[in-house]
Image 1 (cartoon, one colour):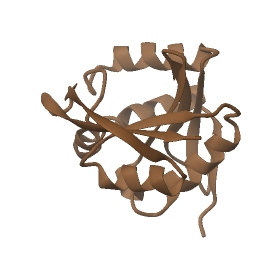
Image 2: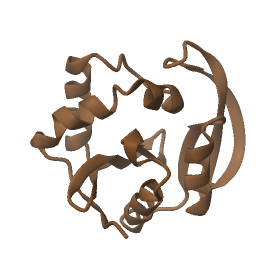
Image 3: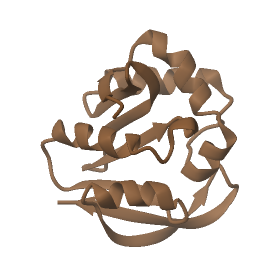
Length: 157
C-alpha cells in the first residue's frame, strides 16, 4: 500500500498545486471554486494568505513522497471546516480518505464541517467514511459551473 503523508506546503510545491487546481474535470467536480483557475496571481495571493493565517492549517498531500494534492482545515464564521484537492490521476485509490484521517488527527476541535457538491459522489463518500454526517443541503452559485447547484453540508462530532 502506498504511503500517504502530510507536510507543510513549500514554495517549491506552488507550481504543481496551481496546475492541479486547473484540471477542468477537477474544477467541475469541486464546483465551488472562488477564483478563475487560470489566474496565477490570485492563486499566489490566496496561498500566501492561507500559509500565514493562524486560522488555516494547509498541508501538501504526498504519496510515497510524490506531491498529489493539498488538504487544509480553516475557520470560517467561527466554524472549523476541511477542504482537499487531490490530483485526478489519484482519485479512487483511498488517498483522500487517508489524508483526511491524518488531517483530522491534528484538528482538536469538534465539530468539524465540510461541504461538497451534492453530485460529487466520490468526495461525499470520502467524508462519510471519515465519520461526517450530512446535516442538510443548500442551493448556491457554483462558479466552476456558472449556475446554481445543490451543495451538501456535513458535520463530524
